Image 1 (cartoon, helix red, strand yellow):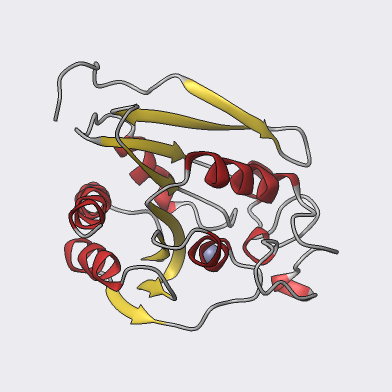
Image 2 (cartoon, helix red, strand yellow):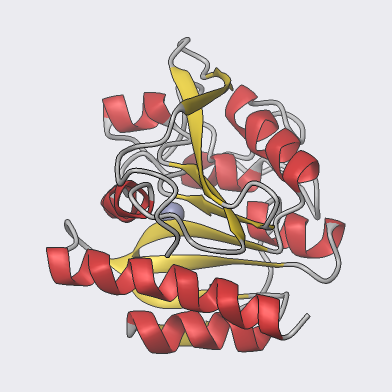
Length: 220
Ligand SMILES: [Zn+2]
């Protein structure tokens, strides 16, 4: 850890607004000239355990890593306690890779990137080109690995103590879009167990993020 930055929340970088006008923000910690790594705490509004992990990461200043942190990509869903956004769209089916029209709980939206929240993440990822993107979900208690560098995903699984699961790509998901769009990078989903994470678990997931980032840096 460098000590150049006080252990407090970073300045918020505004990314845009949700359907209902809520601000969506990122924090950036570590080394701005380092390798970009992205962590999204919550994309499904009823899966919020990862937010505490992002808040923990905000207190760090990892050397050599430009750590981008989006605590909540779906603030309307969090406010309503719903998986989808205020249009009831599943944002993780709204990305432009292998997108197809889906309804019900996995509502894809009328077209790829129809939703402002998905466009915000899409633009951020294209802009910062993260070597690793980690998306927190719940509550399957596993690492959902469907592309990218398997060693990075296995490292995250080992440190987090989540099971490692190679699983198929999903239509319109954020991770599969990145793995296709940005070859050489790794995006995966960390499905935490149900409920809030204990302080010990938050610490473990925080360390897993850094370990995965280090593994990606070492294996480039
Ligand atoms: Zn989810």
